[in-house]
Image (cartoon, rainbow, N blue to C red):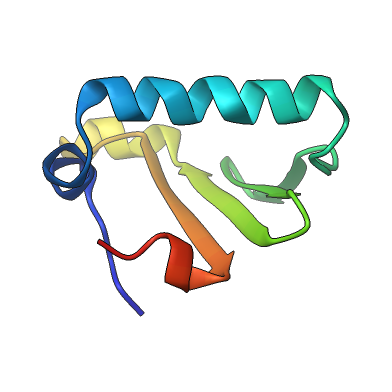
Length: 94
């Protein structure tokens, strides 16, 4: 598994490439080439886990977001998120 953070992404791609990829993803969505089920909510008392899967048939991605409102009283972020990408990695290596 490789963990990529915001800085890694900025180092790997220039801003124009990222914008082009976002535009391509939006086109795929508009054309119905992406499957994106409704977001799932799992509640744990006042905390929530949000699961957001999607796929274009070649890649599968799941965004996991935790929402813990009381974290603010501890000086911690209320929201943490991660995106997991599975699929044909030979095209995303740099």
